Structures are given as C-alpha cells and as structure tokens.
Length: 298
Image 1 (cartoon, rainbow, N blue to C red):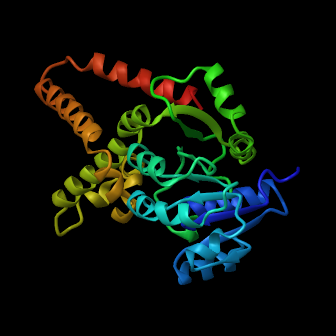
Image 2 (cartoon, rainbow, N blue to C red):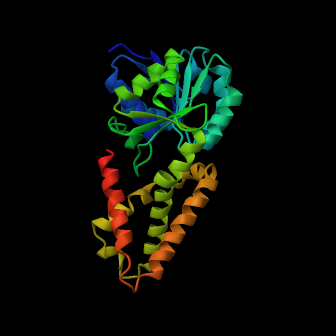
C-alpha cells in the first residue's frame, strides 16, 4: 500500500498518540513517524519501536511533516496550536485526538492560515491505562472516529463526500484511519461535545463516584471491597484513568456535563423513590434494551 502521508509528526506519544503511531506503522510499512514529547517518554517510544525518530523540540519535530497528529491533553493542545501554526509546512494536514472539540476547533480557526488544513478528530477508543506503555496497535480497530465538520448540524452522506473531496489531504486522512481499522463519522463540534458528555465523560465520572462511595464504605477488614466480583470490576474499569487525562476534558465540556449529571441525579432519585415498591421493571427493561442496542452497534 502506498503511504497516504510520507512523514507524520505525532505530538504526544502516550496511549492515543502511541497507539496511532503503532497502528499506522503496521498498516503502512515504510512511513516515517517522528514523536514529540518529554525526553523520557520519547526514549521509551524509541525503545518500543513506536516511532522512527524522537524530537524533544517542537519546531524541529514539525519539519517536513505532511501530517501532524496532536495527541495532547486538550488544554496543552490549545496552548500549542499557535506555535504549531508558525512552524508547520503549508501543505500539511493538522489533526487532533482531543476528547472535546469546541474549544480546540475555535482556537485552530484563529491560528491556521488558509493553506494549512486543521481537521478536528476524536477516536472513540481508549483504555483505563495511560502512557506509552499502554499503547496498542489494535486500539482503533472497530472504533468510531469522529471527524469534525466546519458547519453545524447533522452531516449527510453527500456533505461527507464533499468534505472528503474538498482536499486530498482530508481524503487521505479518512483513508488512513480506515486503514488502521477505525470507522469515520462526520459530526459538528457542538453536537460531538453533547454526545460525548453522555457516552464518554459521564461514564468516567460515574466510575469515579462509585469508586469513592465504595472506598468510604470499606472498613478495616476490607469489606465490602474484598467481597467484590466481576460486576464491580467492570463498573470501576474507568476509575483507573488518571486525573491528568480528564481535567481539561471536564473543564472544556462543563455545560454538557452539568446537563448529563442533572439527568443522572434525577434517575437515581427515581430509583430511590421506588426501592420499596415493585415498580422498577420498566427501568430494567429499558436498560436491557439500551444494552442490547449498544452491543448490536459494534
């Protein structure tokens, strides 16, 4: 397979950036990938053969790159976009993998010239693991990959086609993420952030809250935690994610998270109000339907 891009700069070689680099190297042998990160992380990325080259200086990492993949916490990504814009090649495509899109896309619109294309993105894939040692070449396989259209509203198949045909770089990136096993979904930034609040960010906060409640209930003997089985382990999988990953996500999507948390609070109060009555069958049935629908969407 001919490479879609000849030189890719991956800015942030942690779980997502490292997994992207591994997936691309597996799908397209011969592509050159340079990583930018802290020196200690870059040393590990080289050791694990995640990248071909390591560059601790951002301007140097961008030299000759025709694809720039920004896999940084959203706050740091926003902070670095103006510097990226100053040093990136005019023919490059810059894309990000941040979990919220409105803030970073707004900053990108102010930072980049007409020659450089910025394409907001968010792979709906992840792990409770973090860092370069959690990188996995198969992480994106079967996952939805949100791509952010400039216009608002829902995106029709005809609009998708126009977006991909508008510039060869965009079409090449769509082909690239399909090559690593992901499924592109075009969406606007505001709609993405509303949806992500419910299907990604709320589950994370629920897992954190459940872990906190369980910890507070655990006594000196270790109960009830030591009695836990797979159910609690499954529910607390996301509790292993570090705050450093989630801080900026929460800060850049607070309005949507407020709505999501309000609705969850109402649902919990409804359950509490009916604990002593046999009136929860409808709720269980609805939950079963969602569970089945979710698994059928794979």
